Image (tube, rainbow, N blue to C red; front, side):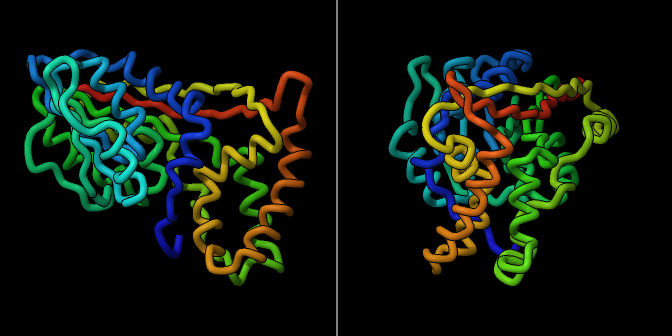
Length: 271
């Protein structure tokens, strides 16, 4: 990608319920920290809506959500920052995950649907796991559907003769997420007991062109950013892409089904 995508919290949150399911499933598999007031980092916290779920699970925790989007952080500060009901605290701060290095020890480092945007993210695992307390956990989930129609059609369209000069190297590469075995091997070699799995959700979406609406909040952001200074071109791309999505994801009387595979990992540092 040639430049970081610009994020729109309102667009992202339009499908917040569906998106939060994976985070809740990830949290359900994370063991409780040993310390009474655990220290938690959420990498790629976005608008903070799912980071707040951490405070529900561990009410006394001191939690910091990190993100590199000013728009997302502004939303998180307003909606979620402050003391939590159980005596903990929820804060948010700017960080680039390509270079973020912990400055203190953590009981949990968690990341939700963010590492796919970080080239070479497995190279960062060593520093993050080194910062964990013995028995602490590093847990993440990432979309594992770069081969799905919503991404493949977007890439094919962007690479076509009309768009390639504007959108070359804008979208995520197919190697942005690794195989489950790759993650398991990396985490195990770093001294962790690792659990890695995949889940495919079949989201039933309502409204007109709901798959386009979904991807406008996430995977399509690099295209929208690259064409932000040319509304006519942006709208033309969206129209072409919308028509392709309508064929790939036909509507039914009950809604439009979006199959969405995700990859999960929970790695517990050996004591």
